[in-house]
Length: 152
Image 1 (tube, rainbow, N blue to C red):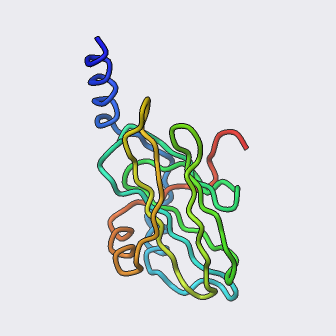
Image 2 (cartoon, helix red, strand yellow):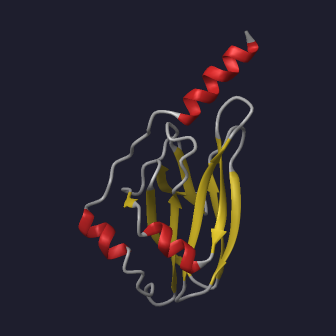
């Protein structure tokens, strides 16, 4: 019985497809030009391109503020204060997983959210990606509407 329950849970994690509200194609195309951020700011692209956990939505926050809820094949773009450390967090199975990023003003950064198997449900984690690889990944994704998180 335990094996069957595990298989059912695992199959749910790997099937289906979550969706979130999306920005217009025009807005996405503008963000994909990867222009330099505003003066004193750093650009932050947070994206999810993994095929694992397609039925899951996961929140992302920067310094405790909601960026939005991810689904497969989406990205967010936001600007953060440059020359400062920021904490990017994503909800996971038991507690948020975080990534600390010191952002230099005038630069763009790419953070990939990925889904990993948990004990009871899929969790999420974050990793900093080199700029060239991040641009390549974001170019293939749709832009999600920011600011939708539950709770805080």
